[in-house]
Amino acid sequence: MKEIPEVPLSKFIKHSLEILKNPLPFHNKNFEEKGDIFKLNVGFNTKIYFCRDAALAQYVLQKNQKNYVKSKIQTEDLVKYVGEGLLTSEGEKWKKQRKMMQPAFHKKQLENLLSGMQDTIVSEFKKIKVDTTIDIFPILNDLAFQTVVKSLFTKAAKSEDMERLQFITEANQRMLVKELRQPYLGWWFKISGTLDKYLNLSKEARKILKGIVEDRKSSGKRYDDLLDMLLETKYDDGKRMSEEQLIDEILIIFTAGHETTSNALTFTFQLLAKHPEWQDKIYDEWQNMGADETDLMMRVSSSKMCQQVLEESMRLYPPAYFIDRVNIEADSFNDMTFEPGCNLLFSVYEIHRHPKLWEQPTAFVPERFSQGSRPFSAQYFPFGAGPRKCIGNNFAMFEMIIAVQELVSKHKIYSNFDEIDITPLITLKPKNAFLRFENR
Image (cartoon, rainbow, N blue to C red; front, side, top):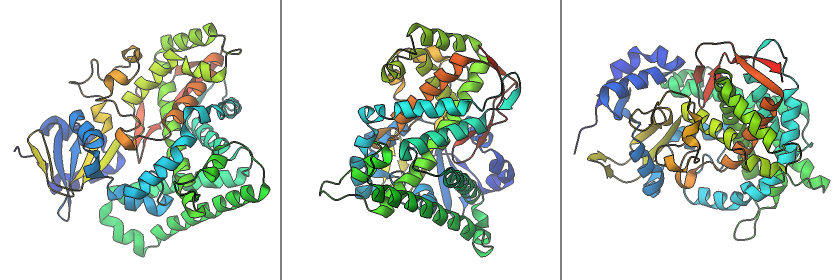
């Protein structure tokens, strides 16, 4: 069995400040020096296995997924902020929740949400100022959040409550990043009261959501939105979700549902600004299908150019840029052994740019997805893979296709930057996304 190369604690400490700012160059250098898997010693006899081996990722996430669970990053660290919902639960609880919630995210159910989705997107795009350079990310962040809000609650939620929820979800993410990248300051976060401050924000978010749920139950009105679907779903024994569990799931939909989408859309518009020929292809496709008269679901399903651009954008800039797993029992793969309890961290960012897996790995080449993403299923994981693949992947794709079409059909996009900047937090976030828009 081969020995997995190790990066010493001293190197981790030496580069700790730059890792806090952006860990990707540090990891890339280690991959280039050590190979597609290495152990990083982060102290207290704790080692993390960083991996960009797509075959190992597929083995762990799909072929032998029963032997792997999520790490404490999600099952403990994230849980204290968002509760134990579909994203953070494990074992039988996860299976029970997934089976119960899956119908709410089926394409036929989502079709009922598309019109409201489009209305929200069109409304948010009115904030765009033409003929001037603006940072597009705040607009897209609000767009994605409002799309989730309207899909969940229709018009039942107060705007001030939603603004507060948006602030809390983003503030708690920043705090979690500090905890993960500065584990040696854990004691300080506790005794200084910093941690309690953010946990209290989570309690406030839960209180807001509880009020919305109780108002919906007492109103007797039906909106056919996600909240109605979640309130009506039942377990196999005929029981409904408890209110606490429902709030856990809603918090996770907020956290995971708007953040990744706003990031992906921002990167997509930046790439389109750099490659105007793809703006024209999307616009021509939109016109040729008679978009204003076409059924919205048919339009979304037929938007091949738009789909290719989004797939390529998420290849280059995957919002969920790391996937973590821990093996329950000892395991082996390709002459490597893993003792029980190994922390494996798969770099989706590196897998998606691996020179042995992709032609022109760092170039924007949407036509590689002309046959869809299925030919690359062994090396392309924008929504994860296996049984724990993101339940909201169709929701996100429908939303992004509508958003890209709506913007490109009305505006031309121009770049005001040389390189696309990133800020890797819990998700891969854009930075300095300054673009200029002109009316078509």
